[in-house]
Figure 1 (cartoon, rainbow, N blue to C red):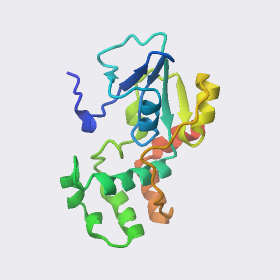
Figure 2: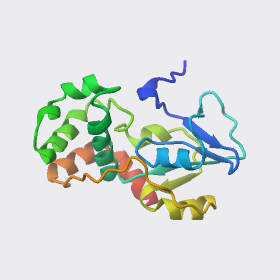
Figure 3: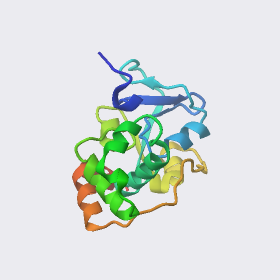
Figure 4: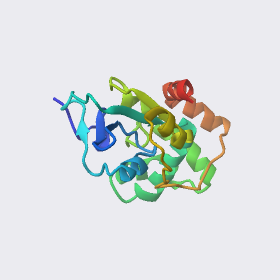
Length: 192
């Protein structure tokens, strides 16, 4: 039986529709999902591929993001929002949580999550698109150009949930990202 609550309420095959532009957006957390849904009035209506197979006539797309940029954004959001909601109990119990140095704390976080991608914002991008009938892969780093060239829509997508806090890609960060997100790196490189 299909579980809508899987992966923190973001199961594989979750989509939003825009009937005006005939868009079917398979969102991946931290990949412009909020901006796209807001711009095209897709909130809060969503569906699940497992419940509705007929999406003919809709342009089916998703957005891929550089895994390094995505995990930094996810981590920043988790620090900002997740310490008092949702997965707060898990977050507070991880070793990284009490480290004061920001870079070392981020590095430890990547080590901590390697065995437990407990939040949809840190789940692999591949999880959200495997066995999903995506026709167009847009790339976060050039999203406005991809909307025009791949979907025929000229937009200037505003950024929501944007964070300025960045971390160095140290040897530890590189090793952990390549371990956890190896398939995401390959997928992103195919379309960048």
